[in-house]
Length: 293
Image 1 (tube, rainbow, N blue to C red):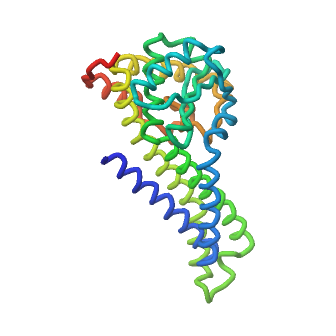
Image 2 (image 1 turned 45 degrees about the horizontal axis):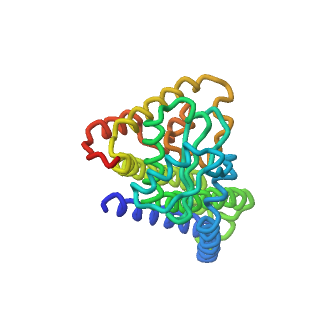
Image 3 (image 1 turned 60 degrees about the vertical axis):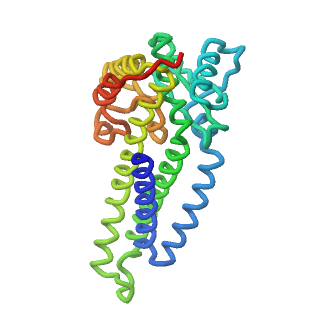
């Protein structure tokens, strides 16, 4: 409950930040425009986030006949989690990773890459899938979509503010608080608001990852396979950091969906959407879970 309450507060902060930048751009009118945009974008996130995430990552849905072992594994773990059978998808990339999407358990999708199926043992892959099912069970996929939508809208409004500032939108009307003060306020909104949005999104994602790790361990009945899988995935990502084009298949807008942050090198490491793997593994190692399988 504490984690869910924290998520609600953070989503509220994102929404408030979005309205604030809209107000800075155009006063009350700008705030109302931002509100309308937020509604439209969140409706899009609600209805189309699942299909968009799959398309943006090049995931192809597969049937039981096409991937029988993977399909049966997902079915068994979904039964353990008391979830309806999600759709199963595969991303053809050597990068080992996995993600879940869908606005509800009834529309859930679990996607894994060909790379992850190649480097993990069956037990480790089951731990990863259990983690993704935990995201579906906790409706984290919808939360992530809403957070990404609001964050994207903040960035969009900030870009509009840049043009408004360029043409005097923040300083051309002294009667409405313009002048130097308005220009300074505009600059703050342009540069600070998108960074603040990213920080809030990271906080949302990180809090949900810890919860999904713990719930995934309970679904599987054993925390060790997921811990081992996280270490393997982290090791692979670290090996690839120095290789040119190692993460070309990753869409930055959906990197927060994956079980391990796929963009770790360079400046992207300063804005991790996931907790440090060492801490996640430490928490899993300390768990004691009664076997359910």
